[in-house]
Length: 110
Length: 122
Image (cartoon, rainbow over all chains, first blue to last red; front, side, top):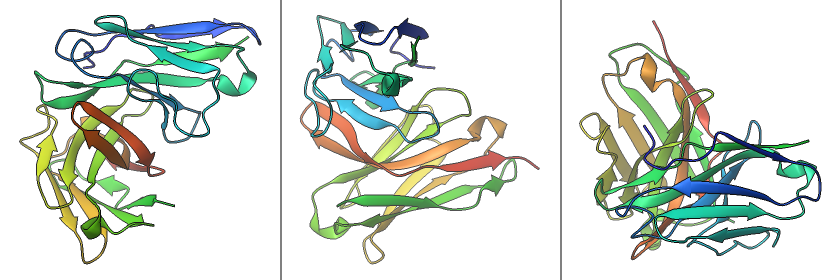
């Protein structure tokens, strides 16, 4: 089972700002950088945010990440229909000596 | 441009061994100081990290799968492989290979294969 907890769903209308939370512990988010992945329907996950708040080349600046303490957040500003996807947080866990993913959040554009 | 492609049987019988290969193109496994790894996703569920291997052979496995998993590298074929033994229906999933960037505490998958569905059934 996942050690990082996310809300199962989030939604918004086009243009709105949506925020997704990711709750962990001192051994993962509290000690290591957080990454976020976007998984469009029927496709492989894609790296969206790495090292808490860095965007890979090609990722729009509408996506931003933050990490206050043992939790992290992904914000999507100016929500667009193509943002409808599943989003996963992830981090290295020092206690497990492994990489852990969040439970995932399905974002719906109303 | 780095690309990864998984291949292997789509159907495995319970108690047998699941074997998958990931062919890497665009970079030589033996000449690059990179890690390589596997992730899986049961149908309709979330992602689970299986493990990673360094190009020279050092491995790191998910503790919950460690007793059944082996990841290896074949530099002559520029590919790496996954073996999962004693499979059950719970191992039915889409299996992804990927390249994790790892430096200090920074670890993330920046390249992914398209994934391959493996079903465990008699």
